[in-house]
Length: 34
Image (cartoon, rainbow, N blue to C red; front, side, top):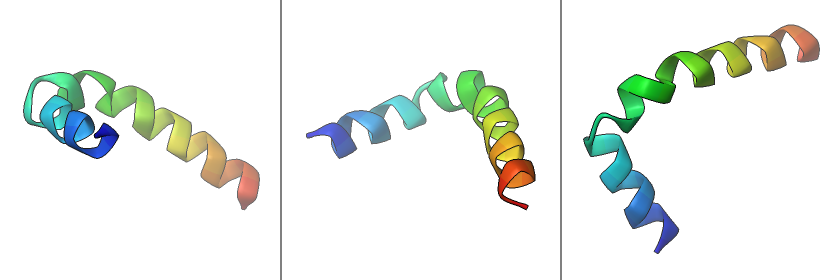
């Protein structure tokens, strides 16, 4: 059920909103791991 909800959110303007935040977090994690 969670997967379907996430997909619905991605189809809406959810991805454009948190895309920048997710990218920033991913970059920080990559820097730490690297």
